[in-house]
Image 1 (tube, one colour):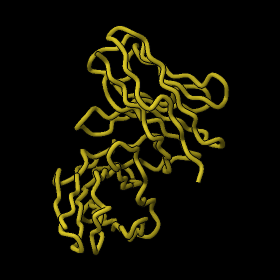
Image 2 (tube, helix red, strand yellow):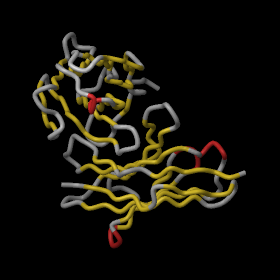
Image 3 (cartoon, chains in turn red, yellow):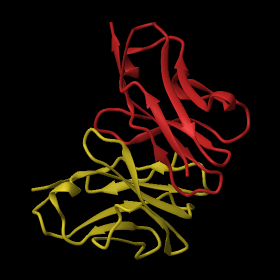
Image 4 (cartoon, chains in turn orange, red):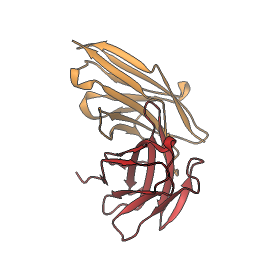
Length: 113
Length: 112
């Protein structure tokens, strides 16, 4: 079985500052890892995914994440926050032959002007 | 980019009533899913569907729930007798293969 833990339910950053959202995974098989973003009253939009290719994954809107097997982590970063990055972010995991995603509890990002 | 669509966007129902939530997955996708998100909580897997049958379901997906692909394009979730605790956002998703699910915008179900 796979699971993820997101550290920090709420992150507040200044506009232009680094955004760092933490995700650690637990998996008995090589994992597929995902970050999704949810804007208020909207669905889930895929930001990026790791599926056993390059360990540094670049996604949309300037986000990237690095898969670190030794640390069982898949942290999401963005060098410079924009006001439009205010949203809830979910880390998720599945197995390579798994048909479902297991989500973390989510991290709400607020961006201060 | 193709999209998963869901109707209605918001459904209000009385406790004990049956509801059907509808989804139109992306046309060439083979795998279909329902997830739900109770307000303030994490997104939870309900059920996956492949080749016209349930491939996996969670403990949440009890006998009150059922899924169907009635006509080759729609994918529905039925809740037979709604409870207050069924109030949530329900997301449909589809994928052509494992590891890339596209999510719909969700249906907010409110049970009174």
